[in-house]
Image 1 (tube, helix red, strand yellow):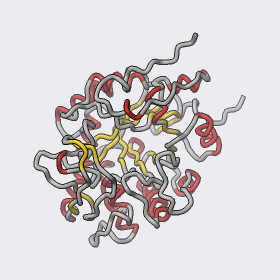
Image 2 (cartoon, helix red, strand yellow; image 1 turned 135 degrees about the horizontal axis):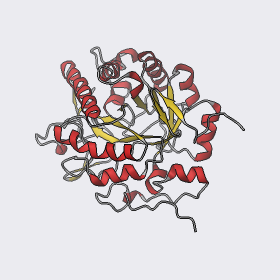
Image 3 (cartoon, helix red, strand yellow; image 1 turned 90 degrees about the vertical axis):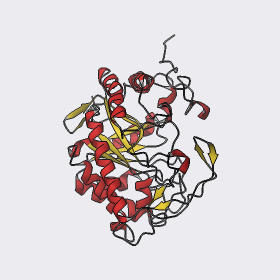
Image 4 (cartoon, helix red, strand yellow; image 1 turned 180 degrees about the vertical axis):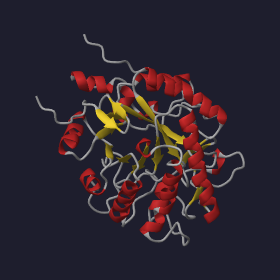
Length: 365
């Protein structure tokens, strides 16, 4: 019998043992209400998907300034911190590990998300070229963001640190720093969106400085093995993609390895769009410069996940869309049961239980 690692084999992650290498990818589902408060419906959702060895929560805003999506949850108030406990307890009761993804939308936002109608913030005053954004007041055109001052950047770093503290108090098993998909950290990393002339802009090393400071701040709260970072080197979402993408992300991965973060979560698949600025980056490239736990994501099937793990390119594989309509995805993989059809996009963000917790587990005939 082969003892080689495979998708359903256990994995030792720091001081935790994951029951398999299947990861629930972070999926924005917009069920937290206008108060951005975790609730019993969300607890049921994560409990249903507890067959995964590791769950990464939906993106969760670290401050009111960071909001850019309707009815997504927050982790910036005492009430939100307390409300998350029902979710973490539900996941743990089902035998899985849940970590919180920390999020700031940056320029991918709109003034109508904030009571004071303040403009979105970004590394530089460069408008997102998308058609429109869904806001509390309906579809709106993107606004030109306000560039953060050097002093303000330090305050955002502190927001991440405090959010990491709240995540720990709420019972999460770790945190993931969302540095992907054209949100604030990605905006600082990429030359397309970062035209700063202070210590946070210019060279790749200086564009990485914001993420470096966030990681260092979060590591004052959590041990290294419980902190991860998500990157999207091939992504075009939120009007991203820079000519020096390969150099930027290999440098970032190398430095994150030196900082000792517990895992790197790479959206290497192209199912979320590709910027077409060269050859797509692969997990194998990241494996050469980063020796910690490596998670692949975006468009994987059971077969391609098995292949990535067998090659040694990945340790874990995250699944997003398949988990929406297959709450028992890991169990279906284990028993070779067929997958349910992919849920339509109309069900992804509807603020109700429909299209959220009403997908049945597989029933043998």
